[in-house]
Image (cartoon, rainbow, N blue to C red; front, top):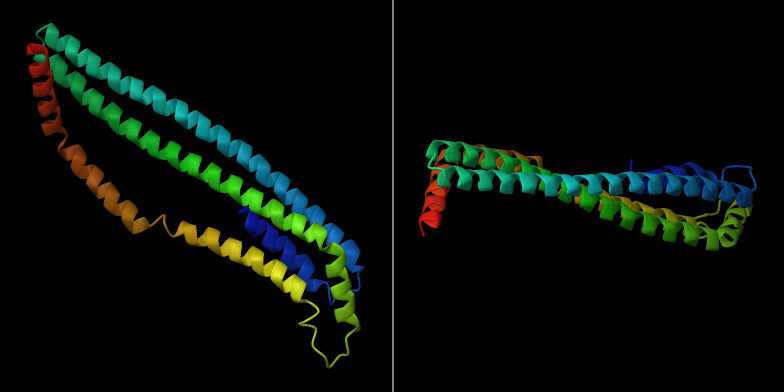
Length: 219
């Protein structure tokens, strides 16, 4: 659940019931702020975890790329020793290591993007919370005014501040949901098919690279 999902849950369960509730609106708004503060702390904890994951994956990417380089060096060593078959096997291992490194890089990129997105979400949420804190007295007065309005009257105008506050959170939540559409499952399936084709053509790639290494050594 995103920080905006959490904020929406708190706002809708507390703010939207203010007019119908007999509770002191100031106290209820104070409780809402406390709950939103709690959600922010939880989100910051999630951010620390996400940053840690991103850092670990970055380290794994470095290690995976070092393995790729290591297998290439072994292929060169085998060629210099006149063992072409061993060099070919080393290049096969290199391409497996390279595929692993590329997969690790994708994971690291995704983790880094998720951390950046969460950091931005937290900063936006902090601004919304500060807005609520700053407008608490005004909102409480609007709620009291709505409660005192004649039964046949409309409270829409007096509750405009609450509507705008929840509306901004709804908009931010919608933006977060929209960004998830980019993770298109059909595109992922197509990418998987291309990766399968690349694996099938791996033998040709190995032979081409072996020939290139031989030319390099001969030169």
